[in-house]
Image (cartoon, rainbow, N blue to C red; front, side, top):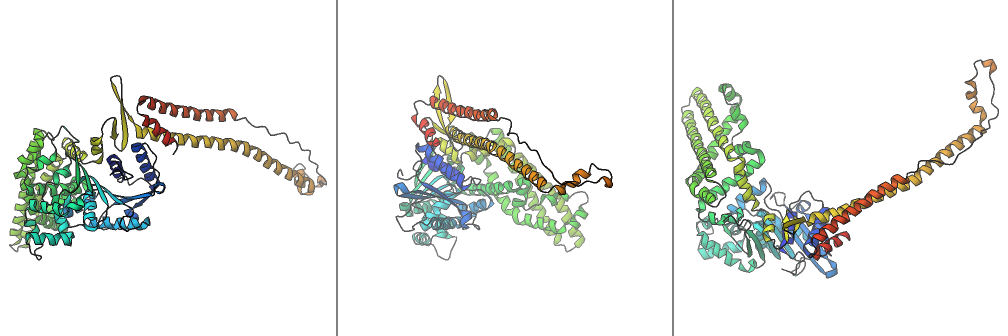
Length: 615
């Protein structure tokens, strides 16, 4: 939509990435927004930039939603726009929301928080809320696409939504959140209002087609850029998800076939179990490493497990409550966990075979992964068998036998737990983690930004690069960094020159003032001595040894001579300081000229330097 202030995909992507930088001050964020506009358009942004955060609004403490509002007020053009950057998955609350909302479709709290934050931002900036007033544009990535789009479908929160590598909209989620959509489904598919789970029995393809048709009018205002290699794009093949809007696909890794084609061949229930396990594992691992995984997924406190050993009776008696609690957690979690792992192991050749075929993992890596997941399944079966034996022993009613059974079970469980932990360590090997990093990179905004690059322009992180050829050599120049160095360098030099001038003024001012001040003190002292000679008799007495020789001072006359002020001339030092600044100015200007000479045909490079100099 070219009529928008931030009118290009590159500008919106860089702005969305900027929304993840929580360390930036509001002033720093404002400067970054202006710089992005300058670099992408070759023009200065003639608009006031104002920033407001969801933390300030306090609208999302419970849901975990994080967002940033940017108000662009272009008064000269009688134009203003409100951009809402919703952040994607960042922390435990977000991952928990992923499972409950996007995969199960049971929650939509972050979508509600998105709408509440937009209202708070409108109030903060004192914007007219009537239709046709300030346009509200949602920018999003990952989970945030689900939040922004769901908020738009439910509450008409936005005029337009722009997303990159988004977690797609979920029709189960909308069924639970939207009365009108829910009634339409019930009427179409003839399901009972009292049966809350009946929707999960409807054919997913029929539901997807129904949802796409139901929201087709609103879909016109949703715009997506998706990498074919994005893991979330692959995940959107699972039941529940449907894709709305104008979608531009980008092949960010041409040497790979993309994950979506791999996922489409894997049964829906297998992917669902695999996804849930992966999310739980990632969440727990980020919080506390492998020990965190053991605690969150298995309910096992490794500190207690490590105490179980030679003197098991003492350990049991000392930590009976903790051990009993651990056994109860295992009894609660292992059956469901074992079922999920079995789903994966029984389809391991299909899942990991396809990853191997696509070139993401080697044959050796595939065999290693399958072997270790199979080992985990075996150990979980061992734990389940041990837990069953505890029930039998406790059923005897013999207290001594029960203690013995509990201790024996605890020792067996320790062996199984340590074996599972060893398998997880193997799966955490660096070369396997590189595969995950490769997949994660395909989810990033910056990889898509580079995928959109064409001609001489590309990106490194959020910086813009220009490429030129000299002879047989290709030279890439980080234009963003060059502009920063030029502007910030000149600012530093201006501050340095100002300090030198202040120093010179201080020399010219303070030394004469100090001389005059001390001269005045001396003259006051002379006047006091001459006016009160008797007061200074004690000075004379210091030189008389007998009281009979005591004398009285009747008059004192001071013969004073004040020579003109003489001090070291610092002109040479001041000159050298100023000369160092001038040399630095020359260096920066030569740096600028060297870059401009590299890009003699790209007149916009010189324009960028000229404009940034005038900021």
